[in-house]
Each structure stands twice: as C-alpha cells, then as structure tokens.
Image (cartoon, rainbow, N blue to C red; front, side):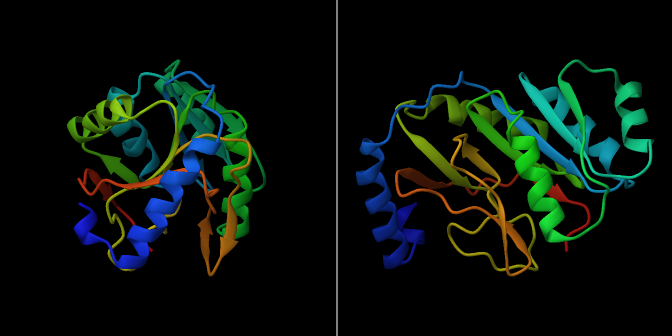
Length: 206
C-alpha cells in the first residue's frame, strides 16, 4: 500500500509513526460515534440515517442546524435509541457554520472513534461493517487518522486531506475552515492510514 504514496507521504507517515509512541494511550472505550451534521433539512437525510443504522452498534450524534422541525420530527419517527439529537445554530451553508457545528457535536461523542458522516451520504452496510472490524484490529495503544475512499471525485484531495472523516477522538482535535473546506490538523503523534475500499455513495457531491 505504501507504494501508492509519494516519497513525501512516506516520510510523513514514518515521522508520525515514530512520534506516536510519545502520546498517551486513548482512554475512551472502543466504539464509533457517527457525527452527522444537518445544516438544513434535505431529501437525503432519512435515507442517510437508515443506511448507517444497521451497522451502528454505538451511537449517531445528529447536530441539527436547520430552522424548521423536519429533522427533529424525522428523529421522532425513527424512534431509535442509537440516535442522539442536538439542536445547534440557525442553519446556513457556510463552511464556518459547518466547522462550528462539527466542533459542537464532537463534545458529545462518547466513543474512541469518530466517523464524520455527511447527511447526503449512503453506506454499503457490509462495507461499513468490514471497516468496523478493521478498526478493532488496530493497536489500541495509538491514535489514528484514516483517509477514507474518494467519495467526491470533483475534488482531488491529496493524502491527509480527506476532510477529517474517520479518526481517534482527542480533545485537541478541532475543525477549522481552510480554502472552503472544513479540515483538521492532526498532531504529529497521530498515525496516518489510508483505506481505499469504497463503500460510500455521495448523493449530492459539491
């Protein structure tokens, strides 16, 4: 797999691996908090939630930034104990709004792994379950950031630039806006991985 990386990528990976021994071991219990940000109610959100629920054994944190009751009513209809619903902000499509909503949701994630999931993405359930099994096999001594497959072909994101979707939770991690993307700078002691098995369909790529 490393043969797919540039020399710079390989050097960065090696440096992160060496520095990872200087960090404390993650203390949160193993599990995945799916972080879903609903800036506004859209036609995809119900399909999105229904696509990931079968593979979720821990929790979905849904942060609702819309100004109407549609998303809240949807959660009541689903009536699923895995979904934790939070109202935040007043909606809008700005990147800063998205970053702020994501940081708000992060504080309620109770498990070691966070998977930031757009509300217009659908999962292949078998593929998602296989990724959960891969996470279980990682060494619990370290913190990780995992590049997921290129779900948005219109943006040529390079290694380390996959919009901070799947990572080990840590209080120092915060989203910020850079060049019209909500991104996250991982500390040098985070191990960097790329798993290119693609199981996500982005219904409304930007």
